[in-house]
Length: 163
Image 1 (cartoon, rainbow, N blue to C red):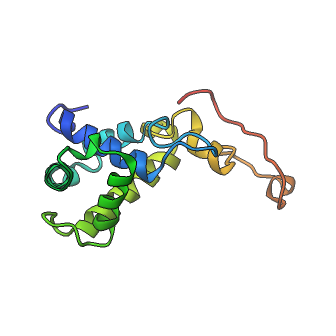
Image 2 (cartoon, one colour):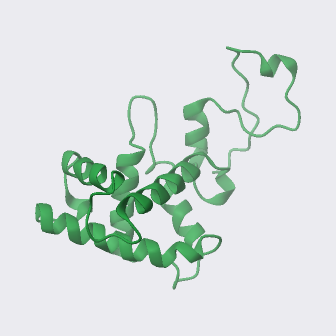
């Protein structure tokens, strides 16, 4: 990864905390942290999404600063309830200091979180097929038989152990 495109430590901590609230680990399985969604986004910002790097930097800094002003600590250090409250304001567009707008940034991060959770692991996220296992996706196959396509049938995974 190109060092000039990677996130700073503060940006990475803030984004990791956001991702953990968007896709938390729970009784259904691993979340964004275990699936390494942060690594997926960092990798993408260093290549295909490099045009979004400045937007991430500006808005992650704005989120950390806003959280500190509202709650006395950066976003990554707040408890889940405080983080969720700030994210709700980010999502509805009422959070101040974001560019082009809070809700636009929220949707960008949400989209990238979903991509990192469910994309092919070779792109840096979905570690150990965490996202695929969560939704019961067996992995890409060359041929899906009629039996594979039947409703309410468990399809056997055919993927390498990579990830």
